[in-house]
Amino acid sequence: MSSTHTSNGPSSFQHHFVEVEGVRLHYVQAGKGDPVVLLAGFPQSWYAWRKVIPALAKHHAVIAVDLPGQGDSDKPISGYDTQSLAKAVHDLITKLGHQRIFLGAHDVGAWVAYPLSVAYSEMVRRLVILEAFVPGATMPDSIPVSPGNWKSWHFAFHAIPDLPEALITGREREYLTWFLRRKSAAPSVFTEADIDEYLRIFTAPGALRAGLAYYRAVFESIRQNKSATKKLEMPVLAFGGEQGSIPKMAETMKTVAQDVRGDVIPNCGHYIPEEVPDFLAKEMIAFFAEEKS
Figure 1 (tube, rainbow, N blue to C red):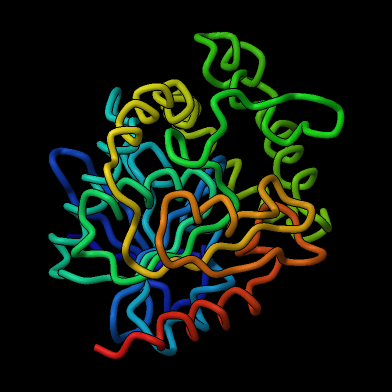
Figure 2: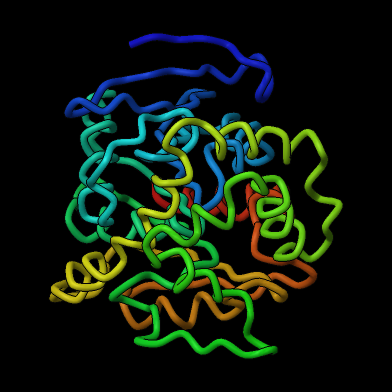
């Protein structure tokens, strides 16, 4: 295991690399206490949680993971179905010596959190899930695209072979800036420095291929998740942004989990951890504190 400090976050953020099944994974750690694992989505990395980590770290050992293909983790050629990604996260957590965790996940990170919670339910104590249709669980069989429902248009685009790379390469900053600032309630939440960091990881060798691979593997992920035979039993806290992609996130999760609470966050878009970090941290801390171990 290697450890470094970088400029991406406070000096209290420890950056680590661990090899799991031949894939080197990067994660950021801070704080002490019962572990909380955080998973981010497309086109982001652990950095999406940077504003939430300091508050969580006052109560917990926080582990913000770059999934395979994401951030500073390796970009393997295959393994982007969410069952494989869930196993990678499980194996990382186990390698770090943790048997029971709290889990927080956003966007594509939530795609991974669901099968992780299904397959390794003894590991996940409580789940916080944000702004995501989970393939094969809560995602509609077909996602309508219309002027009033443009926020999921990229699902089909990213799944097309070769064309996205041809159109995005050379215009990565424009593409990222559109995603981040158009899908947030207040575009100013993302500074130029934030976009620089996301551009750094988005233009790393293999990163665009890997980011698109989550979407190209979605049909396999759907098949896997449809095999789940029972609802999640751990308590679930689910939030959607009023101006986000799935405002009624809690309602969608009730179809796949027994104990769900949550609400629509007013004046918030898709990027909940960055748009309302203080609110989210407070809700997560209170939710995790309900379980005394």
